[in-house]
Amino acid sequence: MAGEEDERALMARVGAGDAMAFERLVARHMPMLHALAWRMLGDAGEAEDVVQESLVKLWVNARGWQPSGGGLGAWLRRIATNACLDRLRRPRTLSDEGLPERADDGPPADAMIDAERRRAAVHEAILALPDRQRAAIILTYHEGVSNAEAASILGIGVKALESLLVRARQGLSQRLARLGLLEGAGA
Image (cartoon, rainbow, N blue to C red):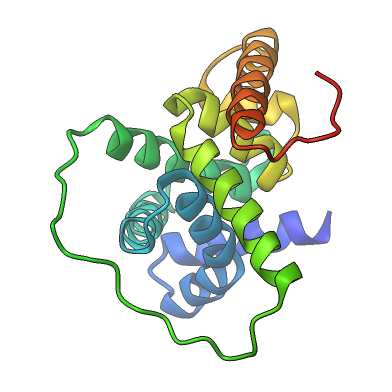
């Protein structure tokens, strides 16, 4: 594939210290890394730190990088996922600082309020999942990676990933049903 060859060439240039090649790779992969980290951590500042950490690893390890599996994107996803899992395992400190107020740009609408309530409930339900279940859900549903690639990123077999996904979906369904957000859905 041309994109794969392009990434190999860019990584070779980055390995040789080419900052322009690095900038191209950053522009290409940073949005995906940030979305993955934000979904896993639920914190924009922590997500930015994970992205920066992942990109530093790209720069430092570019010389020895060898394409495999899903290519550079999969390699970066693996780095970011592991960084997120490491952060989730750390003890958390609670802040007494309140959330900043957010100005509403448009007039409120019932449909928008309901949609935001559902989105927030789903996001919180995902954040409440055990770390590995959360990672499995985010990688397969939000990042769109195959089960095989997600299993590889998490360092488990495909059957183990599928088991994580089943448990995660059950946990999400139960939590959302308790909140009344699965009305009309068969149990």
